[in-house]
Image 1: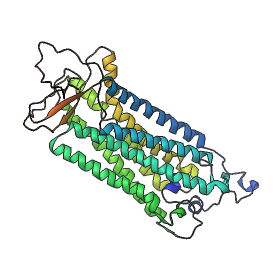
Image 2: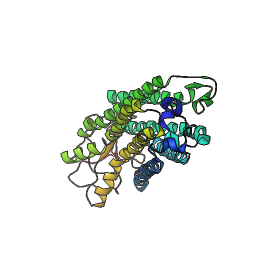
Image 3: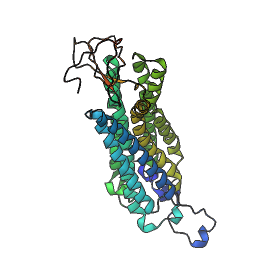
Image 4: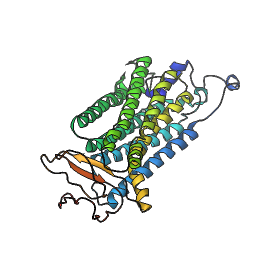
Length: 357
């Protein structure tokens, strides 16, 4: 599927046509079906991503929080991941995961048509999930760092958006993408592979950058040093998705045209989006467990520069105070456990009806 997704035709790339050899000719060839294994891993990742996302939303509803743009984008990312899992399953039912000589010729074009959608939704899930986490960091940052994060969001969507568009524009007519027998022209397979290798590497680099950004932000918060490290690590788990992107970038040039050769890339592609969804929800998961142990929840702060020349106002989710050294910012704590009563030795908090919501 990925082989076709990146502009390569199974038969032409491998120099083989399905079932053109007799049974005797294929007796000595391997006969495997990686489809069931691929489906199991893909649906496991999709289910885990749903569990983490549901927990994230549960924490917000538990605290009476309204969903923000990062939540809606993350939900859209999971829906895209679900669509990718479903279409990948359809591809497996159409012999994807088998060697060329074991595939039914009559389903090849249908499988390749569905594969375009599977690849499209896989990349879309990765793009949306990374955008969601970046939007979360926008709320946490201010000044020049916020501008940098917005630049990351824009460039990420341009690069991966170009990849999404190319899936449907690399051949004229479009139908030649899944039916190479049609008359027309396509961008060369090697060019497409190099382009998608670049987009995968860029996506992985963005994951690494987004994983490092929380550290200086969390370090400014007034809390125990171990808490800082714990929260920062929780917010940096997206680096695992970066590893998935880099693995995919390395494997792309190694594809030889046989469907079984690209199954691993399909799995890594699905893992990229699923892992990012889980990573974006881990900080909330950590707070929930800390709250259930009777401990004060770790503070996950966001800064909103909507109120200039205003004193910092803290919305009560925790009693940890945010040391921003910037009286122009409105600080908002983001947690999952019920609010605690203020202690005598803590500085008073300025609350309004709007901020206490």
